[in-house]
Image 1 (cartoon, rainbow over the protein chains, first blue to last red):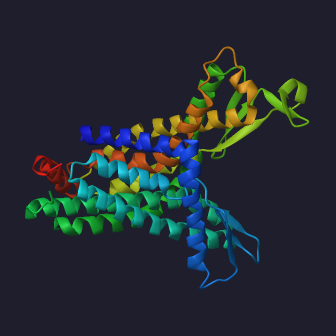
Image 2 (image 1 turned 135 degrees about the horizontal axis):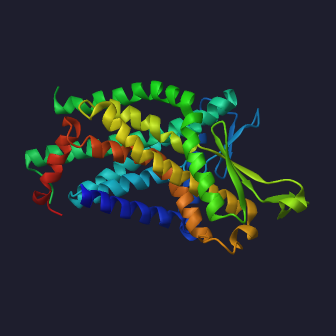
Image 3 (image 1 turned 90 degrees about the horizontal axis):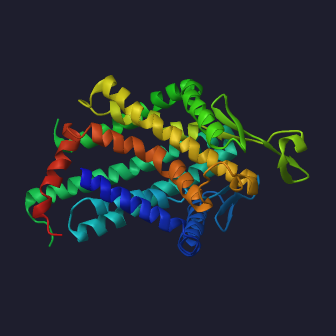
Length: 167
Length: 207
């Protein structure tokens, strides 16, 4: 447990610091965040053609209401937490990579749900939007990370019992 | 109950318990904010007496009152400006870790009940205070600029360090600390015991 926590915290702080380095932020995080805005707009458009996007901003052309996807809302930090947990837990590297890829997708699917829900909540009631945005969604996203990690541990447990862990 | 069915039951319970936990937290959040704000008031008035006048509790907010004001867009002393600049911080941005921790804790049978929950709060609350200090530092840095870094009697961390600890305090610690704390306290419960067996088989797993 102590070894896990130590490696987990080291990887977490290391990746988090790397994310904040300006060249990394500009060349990786910003384009990724812009892609999330595009993807959110692409998912909304078939049902609601009033949505427009530019950069990291999603806007309703009718009301003018807009949401800007900032740090903490792009799922990068949640992914970093998942990566740190998976790397810190002893397992074959193939399993770790698989967990990171699937976990990343699980976090981002949930995160798209967050962005789209906030986009509509903000147009409905700004007070509810603020509350859900600041307090509820961070909890749900981190719970998502926890569930993914526990499912990964269960997978490892089953593999160990079956004795067919990949080399 | 089988180990396989423990996880869905746990997740369902967490989602259900989040509702009363958040409702209760909303009701008591001004009281939760109080001690953290008082600690920050004592700390900042001792640490940075050249820039901080006081840190006051306003509902669920900490209001950092400075000894500076604004005149024609420039930061000047409060005496020159005739008013004081204050920076509000919503303490709930940090204290929402408590209802999350409560939902995790009480969703796990045999995790120690109210007494271990109380111990958990003793661990979480200092993190809330630390987070509040980091947010106040960031607000002072961004709001005051030069006078903040020019303090002669106080150690002032670098802008990069403040930026990093601020981001960690806001984005990572409030949602993550409850999980780490819960995992430590519930490590002997059947839910987590099954995974520690995975860990104990570690040497058999090729690296």
